[in-house]
Amino acid sequence: MKIEVSNGEILDKVSILEIKLERIKDVEKLRNIRNERDALEDAVQLIAAASKSAEKYSAALVALRSTNEALWDVEDALRLKEKVKDFGSTFVDLSRKVYVLNDRRAGLKSTINNLTGSSLREEKSYEAY
Image (cartoon, rainbow, N blue to C red; front, side, top):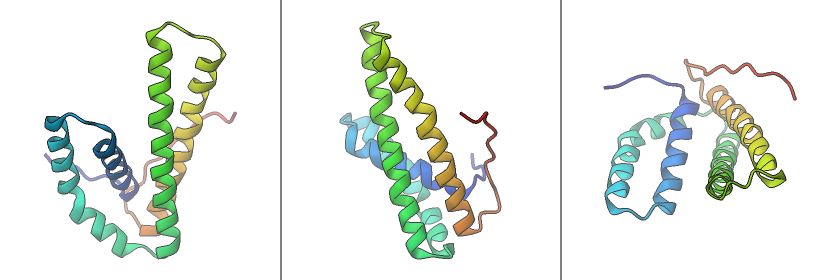
């Protein structure tokens, strides 16, 4: 099955797949992850070629990767707190980081969409904090 999504969404997915390739050790899972990443490679090349500014595009990709790594780390830390039922101030701080990082991630995907002329756009609507 194929569906169309924004350029930012594709690059976000690839970023997460690359993080998984570094952090997951299960051989079967890695095979599936590589397969999914490889299926997106042509789209990644087309998106890069469409970028209006190679420098801004590259910076957005680096920031997206960094944000996704931070989200991964925060979510892992939250799961450890959940496992031991420690819902104190660290748990609250980590929980708050999730939406801050997700907002940053959405902004970066929007930037990528703008830089690459994506015809599809993911729209968000959140209360200010």
